[in-house]
Picture 1 (cartoon, rainbow, N blue to C red):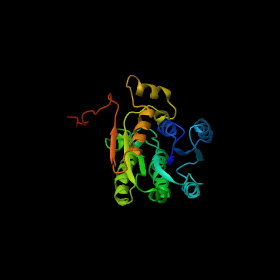
Picture 2: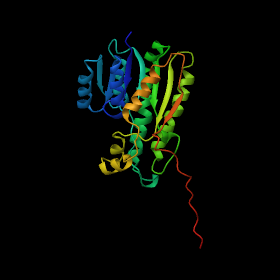
Picture 3: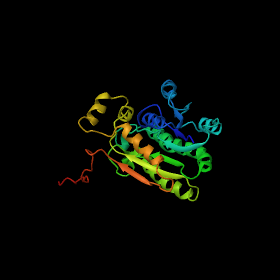
Length: 255
């Protein structure tokens, strides 16, 4: 039986790679994203491999999300796997210099948007039951804070705890919940974060052999296709080149 995967943020990065990976295996796809032209281009690309439904949606628009997901046509309404990928970071400044609008946009996307989509699709996932999966994209930033991370780190810590609590609530339904927390990954992430600063993007990834979107897509596909009696609660991934720095100590100046 053909399974259906619902992917948010499917127009670039991890979401785009996920759509292509699941299409390779013939899954039925519901792909959503804000950029309609990119979404339609992807749907056309994948149409020869699988059934595709493209939904132009901004996960921050609660009413639009709830309305669209309540009226998914058959057979796209039979969701087996939800990949909550839509998310972003904005700005690298310390908290005292950050823009409140950036903070709110990260919260609205990474927290409110993710919970809205999850809440809307829970009935379908519970109907699917054994083997169904919710795969939330967290970040190492939810585990390891860093200067300039402020609200972004907080939103990804939320994703981790929400995933674990959701798994507790779904006990007995057969629905699995995983939080995948990538580290240094090459995508549009830094361009978005820095307002399109190509130099910052290039400098971050230069010589680092970062995680690629296809690596994340392969991992998500693996999580979704594990035997139905297995659940990976949390999975943190880093490029081999990335690790941790010593604790920072601000020393007082002797006078």
